[in-house]
Length: 228
Image (tube, rainbow, N blue to C red; front, side, top):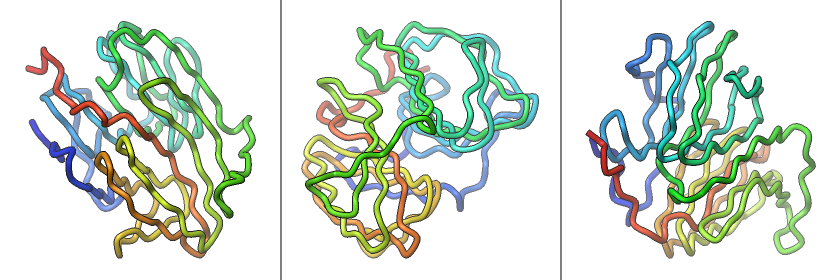
């Protein structure tokens, strides 16, 4: 399966307007944003767990990164409420589920296969810091290495924010919204910019809180070798 598979193009998906699609696991549904591969895939999705739904135990051969949007995600490593940012590097395993139900933004098979850095961060316990180079912007760094940088940003109402995707960029709206390219982005809207793309976003009247990953598209994404 290929979905939004041309990484040389700007892609915008307003996931909140999409129907939920069933996954192979009962009680778990998803909204696919991009995908290379079938059930084993390089994938970016928004996933919803119904109350008392659980996946069977599995190994993330290619790694898993997710942010909890709503509810409480659970596995044997803990309970992760909305605002939790998790990186499970390649070869980690768990048994995910949710007693009360949850919604997560998740990325699969997008790690360096030699990466072994585990991250479990509750962003509710961290403070935003002012960006001295950009008026009206506050930052919360979540992860950075030689390949990519991940952060949360808050944009004050009406702020014009330059999005310079030198190494590619993804922006997911968590709260509020913005306008970019004449298009309105609200909660669960996702924007992917190719390498070298430059644009501007204007924060809405209630400002915007966004999740951003940058730099990770310098190498052309490929499906997992065992994607079928």
